[in-house]
Amino acid sequence: MRPTFLGFETQKRTLQVAQKNLDITGNNLSNTNTVGYTRQRVDLYAMYVSGNRSLRWCSQTNNLSVSGQGVNAYGVSQIRDMYIDKRYRENVAIEAETEKTVAILSEVEDVLDNFETDGLLHFTEQFFKALQDYSVEKPDGSEVATFACNTAVNLCRLLNDYDNKLCEVEDTYVAEMEDTVFYLNNLLDDMNILNDRIARELLTYPEGYGPNELYDQLNMYIDELSNYGDVSITENRNGTFDVTLCGIKVVDGNEFKVNHLIMEDYESYNQAIIYYESGEEMNCQNGVIKSFYNMLNGNGVYATGSQNGEYGIAYFKSAVNEFASTLARVFNSCNGGYEDPSRMMFEPTVEGATITAGNIHVSDAWLQNPTMIGEVRSLDPITGMYQYGFDSVTNEDGTVTLQNTNVIYLLSQFENTNIKFGNAHDFQGSFYQYISFVSNRLAQTITYDKSRYDGAVTTVDTLLDARDEVSGVDMDEEGINMLNYQKWYSASSRMLTALDDCLDKLINSTGRVGL
Image (cartoon, rainbow, N blue to C red):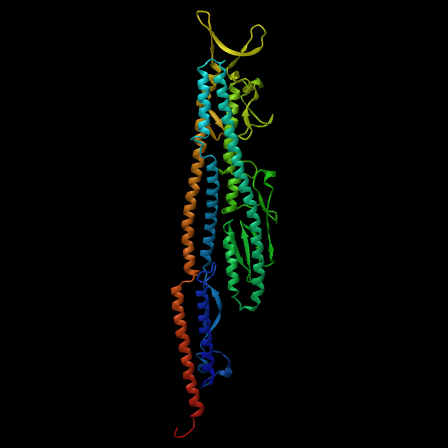
């Protein structure tokens, strides 16, 4: 015969487990709308038959007396799929990167929005038309010469404005990148603190189980971190997590240490550089940090140092600078400015500096003498020295007609398709063609990243739905579980009543004759 109270112990434990299942179901339902909550369950196992000899009866190998000891629980676990979590975080990094890239390029597009309409193309055409009007007039016509000079002034001011606005966009995202580094360091500190709390809490939990709510918070931190770079995690024996960002460990769950990020001064290097306290330079494959790198350091064929070949703010600044410097180089050369500085049409605001969109302006010599570009250089046969004057033709009647040959020559440069733009010959063609080339490159870059973003959003939404199916709380499913556990509890209670009746019969009725 089995021990008298074995059945009571079995059913008591069953009631406790059923009650705990009801508690966890209620907890799941209570947290249906809690951000980051992971559905929990009670892990059950069937009680085994003890092999202790003192509990055996009938024979040395028969354990019938202690069979049927019911159910027990290992602990309360979270329902998560680590593979889905990994895939979700990988694609969230791509989504965040492309979203930030499109946002930055859209601001660049806002600056250069009128590049091919009423912006650079328009002012270049105005300069061309003014020179064209001047070319059909006498070269000493100061009124048309002044108008041509003024259109050049307007063109320079537009280039100055482009450079100023692109610098404002650049400064905005340099500051945002600095704020991001500060935010990430705080996030890593929070994760480290949470690791320490988890390690201390695990001292009171059974092996393999831990404080699920703290794990939810840690997973939320990891999800947030995955927006900024490639994240991977490793669980330690003490229940904490090591976190790796872009291939470098940033949170050590065993030592409770953080490897903070440091951003170099942007002004000093003229490029974005982030490295870890441990000394390695940050190199992300995906994420918001990668977007910052590409947009601030992406300088196409003009890349130097830690810059890269992407088409970011730096490239479009360089492209506008290249237009300005090429415009100055071509027209200064055609006007003889490199042989005689007084013939310069365009100059930098600081003498000796390289001409850029930010510093280009019409030379003082041209402003003071607008008809200067109508003059040509000729060799004085008497003095043997070069001199400048208006080209002329003597007619049959002895009259002299002034020729505008130099202005006509300057005009021809607008249609010159052999002009090379870029230090690595990024483009060869006319000024008009180069304007279209830069505008198209910006549009193509935005289109490409928008396409990547749309694909990443679809993938992330699919993975998020898959994760919610596994880890999210389903009201219908939990309602069914609640009914099942309630029936389980009621049946176990009824079993206790039956056992109580049996015990009452055994104690009060056994051995009493006639009863």
